Amino acid sequence: MGEFAEFRAWEELIPDALGLIFRNLPLQEILSVVPRVCKSWSRAVSGPYCWQEIDLEEWSRRVEPEQIERMLHLLVRRSSGYCRRLAVSGVPNDSILSFIAD
Image (cartoon, rainbow, N blue to C red):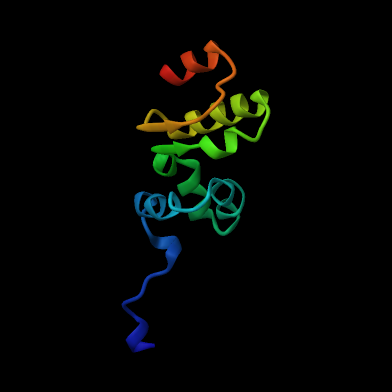
């Protein structure tokens, strides 16, 4: 036990650190797998930490415009104004662009 006393559990990391780690995962993992691991991981992906750079470019080329709009609403809200970069194709209408800009 003595030699392992220095190690800390993943769930004890601050949300910023977890967010930096999680943003390297695929979007699908961040949305569906990570939140189910533990409460602290769920809080980290619910906050703005993972959503400073949102890349939907590849995904948005394969889905219907309604799905793009729903996903953009979800992720832009989660970013809480911290989004610095957004990559997406096929934005369905001007109202979603206004929402993103606000």
